[in-house]
Picture 1: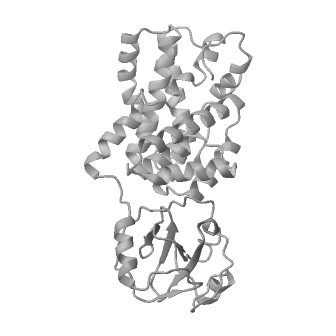
Picture 2: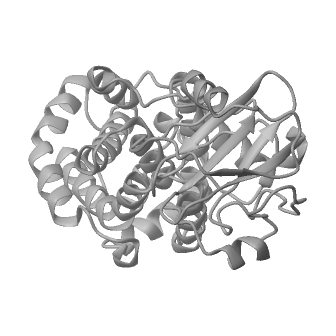
Picture 3: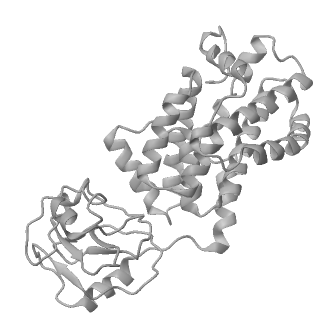
Length: 357
């Protein structure tokens, strides 16, 4: 959420409220200042409107506004949010009110002379959220095993558990999968839930760092990074109706400050696609169960038909665990099975192994 601060705080961030004044904003002051307008020179500048106190989903093809050769505009009025005009950029926003008429221009570079020109450009440039009727199709594709996210390269510690003689048959496998599901629910669902509710860069960066510090074994940490990075790469390429995914990935790769852990990325993608919190968290549990059972098949613990039967039988347990750990804040994330964490950490020491983790 962005709220417009008073004039003094805007000026302290280098954004002038009056007529021509040069701004020293370098791009990262945008949210701190409560927002400004950016206009690029040329005919192909894009216009983005952030409605009254609405959340911003923006894309900038440059690293910051200085690369777009732009200048600033600031909206006047006490109850107006913020407007952003970005070169080669577009945004997904809920428009809840009409565009205010009181707008101040600063540092003018070929600015449109009429308010109607701005409104027309906004209407031409705004990209809206995916069609509600297509939402389920996106959900099914996100859960499709064909989606190349690399999940089947990981056994979630199952391979190490087999070689440690903790699992030797179908009953042991069933018990282990339930423990893996509960550990996943207690530790990772809070990250999925929070990012689904607030799918923005700031929350993602924060939770990614928290999870990176929370994961206690290097094998699991690397697996999470590998799957998360692959998921965001695939999502950015597949779900092109949400350009913010591609923008976030490009920005994060450039910055080098994000690890791309899987649970936060999954929640982020689900949130931007429009999936609700319950669906997103159950989807994460489903993909975990699916990948563990698939690994068991390739490790010859069960056959393909037996794996399908087992997965169906585990659905009730997965539902119960999902309800138990659903909708919790990140502060409540915890491990419920330290033994699993220890066993998975031994995976790198196996003499022969089929999976990456």
